[in-house]
Image (cartoon, rainbow, N blue to C red; front, top):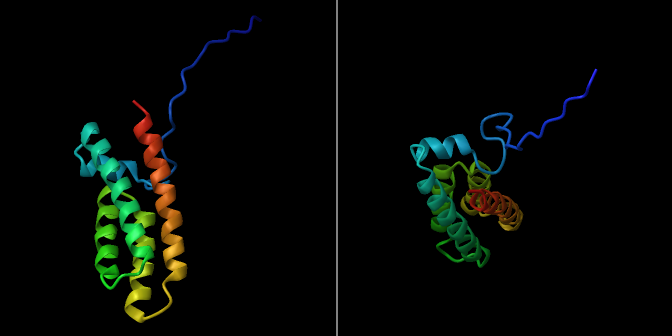
Length: 125
C-alpha cells in the first residue's frame, strides 16, 4: 500500500473555550462587528494605553483609582478579561487601604501577557 503524503497549510486552532488566552477574540469580534481593521486599531490603542496607564499606576499617584478604572473599562471592551480582573483586585486594594504592591505586580504581568498576544495578532495578516 503506497503512502500518500500531502502538505497541509498550518492554521491557528480556535480557542478551547471562549476567552481562552489573554484576549477573548470572539468578544473582540463582537465588539468590533467583525471589522478586522477596527480590531487591529483598538488592539494597538489598548496596547499603548495599557503600558502608559501601568506606568502611571506604578507611581501610585492620587488619581490612581481613576486610571485603574479607565484601564478596566478598556480591557473589558477588547476582551482582555485577565487585565480587567487584575484591575479589580488593585481597585480593591486602593479602596480598602491595603498595600497595592502585589496586585500592581500581578497587573503588570497580565498586561505584559496581553500586549504579547496583541503583538502576535498584529503581526499576522
